[in-house]
View 1 (cartoon, rainbow, N blue to C red):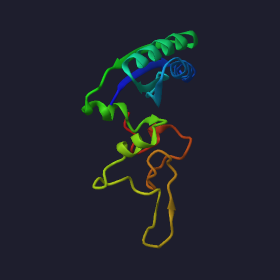
View 2 (view 1 turned 180 degrees about the horizontal axis):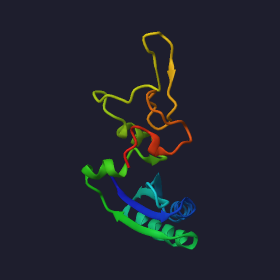
View 3 (view 1 turned 90 degrees about the vertical axis):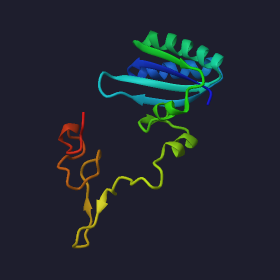
View 4 (view 1 turned 180 degrees about the vertical axis):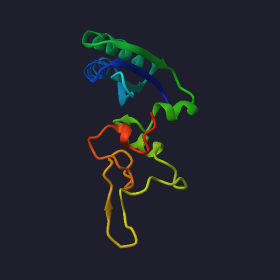
Length: 153
């Protein structure tokens, strides 16, 4: 694994500006972005050679600060393999295909149940909650997350 660069901003517009400036300024690969829970923080992740990632993070942070607040920046040269699940987390949007396959659960791990289950009557019950896809959940799409029986803040 090569060097990893992270730019954490306040708001998606600043994150987009940071990502655009970063990939235009140096030879880096944009890995994706990750939204935090609350506070409107967005983290942009990229990888490349240490010098390229350093230049990209500096350029991205400078461009993002013109739009909104830059909360933090980080450059990790050759991160340890144990850090890989944190970098390629399942919450990251825009994962490259290879990283998606690596982040997918192993075949021996049980996956989430399907959105529709067939009770004894043979008819399908459609899940109404788009967060947990559990037919027993009373939450409907568009309602607050706290109404979901599986929501854990």
